[in-house]
Image (tube, rainbow, N blue to C red; front, side):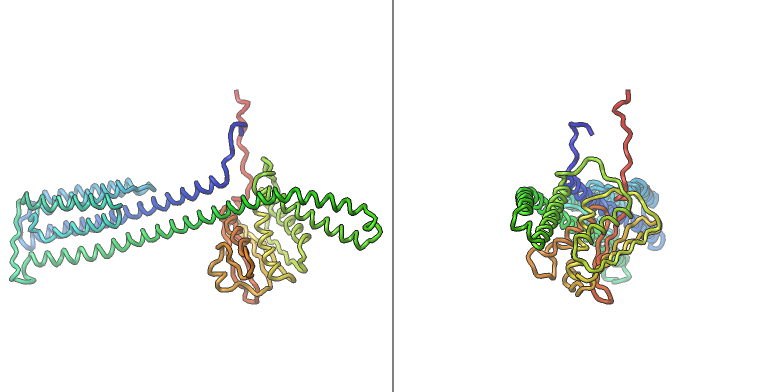
Length: 456
């Protein structure tokens, strides 16, 4: 990276990824809607050809058979081209959907003009096109479909076609016109119920996905605010901690303390806890990027986990830490302070619920062992049903203290940033367990790019 190049901020990357996911969701819904239109058009083509042949040969109503079959062939060619064109693509906009519906309206108008015009009972199929436009398109585009359908009906009135269909309602069900009306109603009802129902489900899934993304964006913003607050607090705490360290050093040399070993032990314990506070502040600043080195620290998975467990157990009053590591082979990874803090936070929650025993089991899952699985267990009272139902939400805690529940909320979002997942459950034998699953590819050391600065 040259001196004039700036590294992108994690917040900007996160916002870009969320916006990208939103656009991908919208594009995916557009593709599926276009697929539904293509399927509907195939069904309409089969129905058109069957109806044309039935009316021409069975009812002996002479139609311009060659011309009508030619219109159907053109529509079939258009549908095949649409299928081949849109299958490899992931982006279908409103303009493409509108154009497809207008082609359907034009083809329907041509077929009706050739087979009775406004006297054709299938003229009500315009309403199906209008309904599809109202479901698939924004308001302005749906009104374009309404205008096109209205223009088609008006054109059939002004320009009668070569065939006229006479209606004799007094014949009842024996009248071909009445039969056509019934067939049109059944066809419209079935297609509307089937395809509009599918499209509505697609749109509901899209809306649900967008709602999840909006919730994720709100959670990310909440995390950014907490990160800024923690970073500012860490800066502010640096000075008083340094002052306390100096005072403890002076007290160690004063007469009242030098002659009392018990007081010296208290000073040693205070110095140890003060050093731990400094380490916590340093960790906050590292996570905020204030003291992060540019070169990533390379280590291995086993070494990373063993060091983490050793450091955690040495600084926590845990009586028994049941640490089990089931790794067939060690793999190189990047030591990430955020991941270390997340695992430590999960262990802290387990320790608070069960001071006597905490379990940590590590394994690799998947066909090729591409997932890292860490299960943290405790022997406490377990999660409440409400806590499990709202798992991952901020301030979701049964501990009853202000600000509780942020630990798992932050851990869940850190896991999400690695492309992993976090889940919680109660153990059958009592207590709770939290399972963290991460793709090992997210922890791998990135390949170094060739240095081209000296290429000449």
